[in-house]
Length: 265
Image (tube, rainbow, N blue to C red):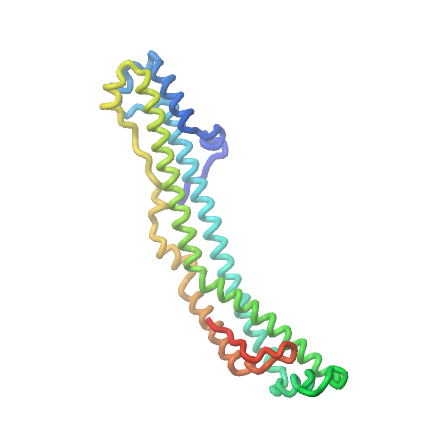
């Protein structure tokens, strides 16, 4: 897991290090008498400026891991919530559908003018028919909500993986930027140090590395975050709704006269 970051760490407290700042620090260090031999005698020596670059990179890594955890957690939370809501909506549609008179077409014909008729000649719906029409309107809204939740569930895996890889790419960019800053520092150092040639051959500061968190198996993490059972339950609820639609909801609507709309996965 990502390390907790102390708000007082240098990566956050100091201004961001740029290539120009790193180069100027190298120029200044090259002119320091105290650094006359140390880069040669200790090839792994890290002056404070280089240490700050490492601290900045570690802080950026930690921040990216924290942001990734929040983004993935949100997807997982939305997926679980969508599954619960989807099941509830399908159950509500079933209950409403069961209470509707099966002869919806007759109600439609009673509520809409036919050829040769005017609206003045059409009778008003009875209170019972008005209730039924409101129920059908509610079903239509539920149907739209169901499709939205199904879309969220069916894209959850790809969204989760895309988020995972996006943050890993950001971490790689941060690593490359940190390596570039050390090069900028080195260029400044070699421009003023008397032993520039020897330093160029011998000085080898430690390498930047990504934390192990970035190399975890995303497939295994995804299976733990969004278990197969969640996807199976979503598929089951979707099929249950499709069966209900084909059986009860396909006739034309009292309100809209929509004859041919079918949900399609």
